[in-house]
Image (cartoon, rainbow, N blue to C red; front, side, top):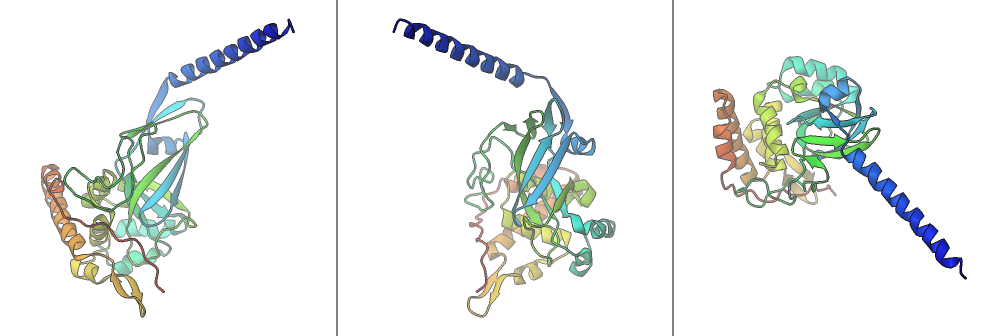
Length: 294
């Protein structure tokens, strides 16, 4: 019985020693100097490996693995694009043709649709807050801040972290993206030189525009679809449910307004008109959920 206090003391000392060692290790790791590098530069130099998993037309998971033995402080791009791996040859041809091509020309590459968009940034509150005065609009929930700063991500050596990307399709008429199709993420400037489309993807990532409104504008620019043609697209064509439009009338109205702002911004090489338009009080309704024909 007299040995019991001694044993307790030994155990307590061991536990304290272990806790102290663990805390010291964490402290050193948290303050370890990080190497700052742009994401695509890190990809090209093989310092990171990236998996782009397109969940559907609206969002994708992006897994980023640090292949180095030091902390990386990655600078995230404002906008990105991703193309199906099996459509690489067609993708190159489309890049040369430009985005003024008709739907038939864009569809020559085959495969699923390419996508454009941007990363959901840390520190946002989530929900439907797309800009200060946009009202209740659709487009998904942002991540809570889990170590991803606005435009940057810190990743430990030999670790993998996940980003969520908000996206729109860029090749109307092809099958929608899905997780079974392998994609490769590329700088959006390699996919298009259209400054309007690049800015659209950036504004989508910043949550200044709903996904459905952005989708209408994206197909207008990327595939040359007129507003009239966009208005005739159906989400569902069913003999039982009838036709369900892809875009609501208000969404197309807002898409035209956004396109006008992008045109003005692109023409004047200034963001002031675009930012002014994005601060308007648009009455955009919640984007409808994707339905399945029966």
